[in-house]
Image (cartoon, rainbow, N blue to C red; front, side, top):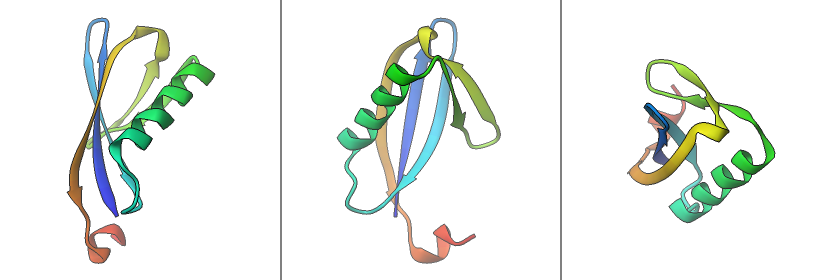
Length: 78
């Protein structure tokens, strides 16, 4: 599994989301999924380290996706 960190720059804040995907998934694919989600919805839930955030898609100004790390099997089953 791969862990991606997504930063949403909003009008007046920055939110961080952790997304876990299969090994074969690239960050461009994650970005495309996020863009499709933004186009289809007015709000969505972003899962952060400590809490979940409800994000109003009209406030998003910039999105950055980083490949954080590759997870071992024991880390993904916790």
